[in-house]
Image (cartoon, rainbow, N blue to C red):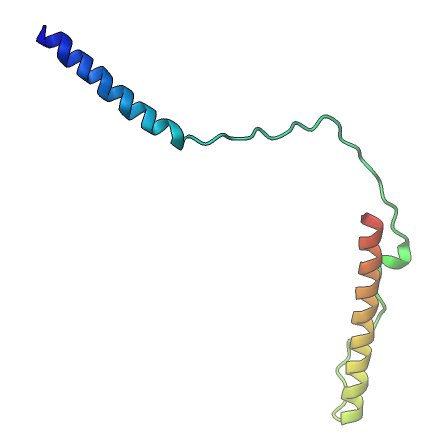
Length: 92
């Protein structure tokens, strides 16, 4: 008789504990499966694949030579930046 009472108390205790844990479970969403892949080839014009050239020789010691060199470097950088922007637009 005592065994039955102990077993009943154990079952009641376990049921209380297990129901308390039930609310902590989180649902996990399953990611969608890709059904179709579309491959698109984008043609980028050759003029967008190269940047403007600039001389790699060191500028002279005069301040005007250094300013000319900096201006040339800036123009080349802006040319590359603009071409890269056009390539990005084509890839969208």
